[in-house]
Image 1 (cartoon, rainbow, N blue to C red):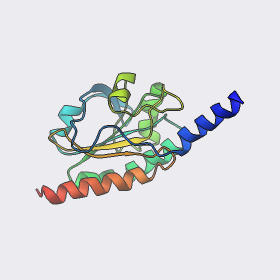
Image 2 (cartoon, rainbow, N blue to C red; image 1 turned 90 degrees about the vertical axis):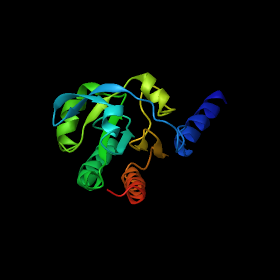
Image 3 (cartoon, helix red, strand yellow; image 1 turned 120 degrees about the vertical axis):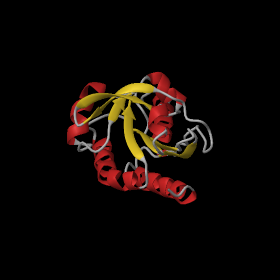
Amino acid sequence: MKRLAAAALALSLVAAPAFAALKVGAVAPDFTTTAFLAGKATPFKLSDAVRKGPVVLYFFPSAFTSGCTAEAHEFAVATPEFAAMGASVIGVTAGRVADLAEFSKSECRNAFPVAGVSKETIKAYDAVLAIKPDLSDRTTYVIAPNGKILLAYTALTDPLSHIAKAKEAVAAWRKAHPK
């Protein structure tokens, strides 16, 4: 009976939609990390990135998994579109950080940086994967230049929806803030 209850709980955590705790309008927590772009390490600080324009900050569970690879490919394809709207993209994870240099080349196609983040950062963004707390959930935030959240979206089992949601949020921001 205990096994059945545990299995039901685990299934409900996977099947139930998750909602990012940081609400639209909240200030995004700043963080600093080492990111990889085209396989090369580079410092990344969120507060520096948002000064240049909106940032699409997407959390993914782990490099080289099927959903994360598909999501990275689609963000790579969309990166020029985000750039045309004045936005940048960064993918972050608490999983498989040793693989990020290669992941940045092969799966992100040298289009945008990816970085490892601490457990504290995934907690601050409420992006902890419930079924495996050492990993990041699939959560996307769009952060305005003033540091405020424009979009908070979590959908673990639908990696490709994150790109469309982020585009919509950046486009709406751009419309309200023309160049």
